[in-house]
Image 1 (cartoon, rainbow, N blue to C red):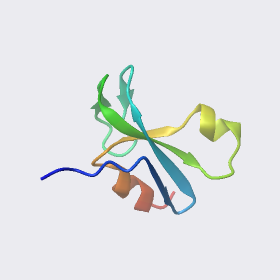
Image 2: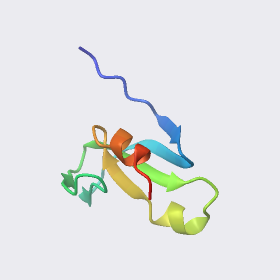
Image 3: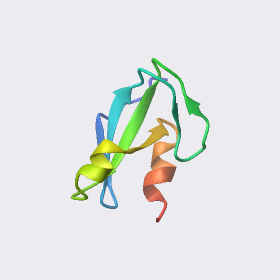
Length: 72
């Protein structure tokens, strides 16, 4: 069964964009590592300025919907 990879997801004022990791990151939802060459979503707040763009949250493809639906 193929998995659909959406390039961009917009939900609750957040924008998640698909990227391929060049180095190791930590998932904001499950706190497990995102390994190099693994696809992940970079999540920013819409209209929040450079702080969100320069330091986005990152989440695994399987964790992104839980993260976007969570209230901060």
